[in-house]
Amino acid sequence: MNVRTYVRPTTGWWRRNPWYRAYMLREASSLFVTLYALVLLAGIACLVQGRAAYDGWRAALASPWSIAFHVVALGFFLCHAWSWFAVMPKTMPFVTVGGRRLADRAIVAAGAAAAVGASLLVFVVVWATQP
Amino acid sequence: MRARSNKPIFWSLFGAGGMLAALVGPVLVLITGILVPAGLVLSRDTMGYDRVLAFARNGFGKAALLVVVALFLFHGCHRMYHCLHDLGIHMTPGRKAVFHGAAAAGSLVCAGLLVALGWGR
Amino acid sequence: MQTTRTIAIECMRYNPETDVAPRFQSYDVPFTDDMSVLQGLQYIKDHLDGSLTFRWSCRMAICGSCGGMLNGIPSLTCQSFLRDYHPGGVRVEPLEHFPIVRDLVIDQSDFLAKLESVTPWLVPREPQPPAGEPNRQTPAQMDAYYQYSQCINCLLCYAACPQYALTPAFTGPAALALLHRYNADSRDGGRAQRMEIVNAEEGVWSCTLVGYCSEVCPKGVDPARAINQNKINSTKDYFAHLLMPRGKGGG
Image 1 (cartoon, rainbow over the protein chains, first blue to last red):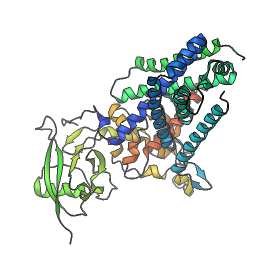
Image 2: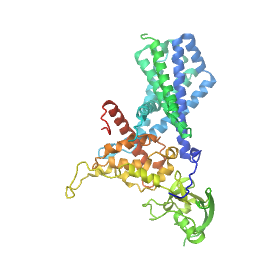
Image 3: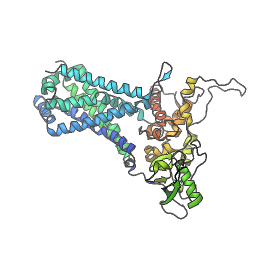
Image 4: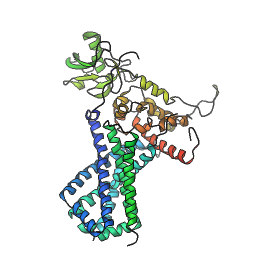
């Protein structure tokens, strides 16, 4: 094309639309997934070093900063879980059940149900085996 | 002939980590980061040294800990790398290696630590 | 008797011969409740400013010509109504992520090249004589690809896709949806030759499932689904190739 076309800049694209902002929030959850994994890794490292080090890690977990961090992390984990199941139908081929295509709603609901079920299972096991 | 992307490897790890994080991430954060340290609903001693050591020395416990730490790290690092790309930061192959390398390193360290704890009660 | 009200339509203007950068020009347009934004633009061109330049054709959301950004949202101007933008007004801009040729007209040649690159035709499974048996397909077989065949090439999905903005080499939603349309068609045997595009960085792997493309599509094509289903296919192909390399093309 021998016309002088104009190319618009893309900076700040994600601020221009609520859909994009929700997407970036979902992506930001990854920071907290990583940080939580590092908290667990730190705990395992302290476990290897012995009782004193490990009890130090537990004491740090009980601090207000740590509780606050985990409350925020929980929020982001829930954001992750919700958005994960919401887009799950897009990653799967169509599923036909008895000749009819399975609705996306059903797949999202199944995923959410699985998460609730798995979470309850973990919680019940931990609660039932506590000292 | 276009070059075949290597994304499938990292995407598979990202997907596995994402699924695990979606299924049990919230409850794990709730238990280990809020309820037990604050002594709410669950006793503080749920994560006491002897109990957790026994769990980590058990084969199932080792597997559970490694899977959670490694998959969460691969999921998180892969997505954070994409996040920076989305913010307009140019992600060179070197920078890509930093993110996936960090996840791999963290997973290896975790595996090493779990082995160092030994087996049995 | 319909009441006539007035709405402010603010249009992006750009004349490559005289302007260094785009500017905005606002027009007060009388409208009735049945008027589309396209009719508003036509009113401007017919009565207020004959120099306003924009694409349109069918007026009924089937030709794909009239795409633009209405208050920042990728929309077909023929399918959007002035009554819904009153009293705040509507800002009309050319489709995002494409170079502006003039006013509301964009250069879509990049998209056309990408469309050609996905082998967008039925590749017969075996050579067939012209007078041979007709292809037969059950309703279920057609259902597998039907929605992906509804694309009108309106480019709203490219305007919606931030990855297309960040990675201009990305093949993009509509082209990849069309690729999937052929792969999913039981009559087609060209999957292998399309895998090269699928597997490339600029194929499915530039997509991060923002999902806005499927949200703005006026035809329910759901390109997000077409692309992300093929991530699984591409992964299977990747590991198959790793374990059993077969040279160019693979399985």
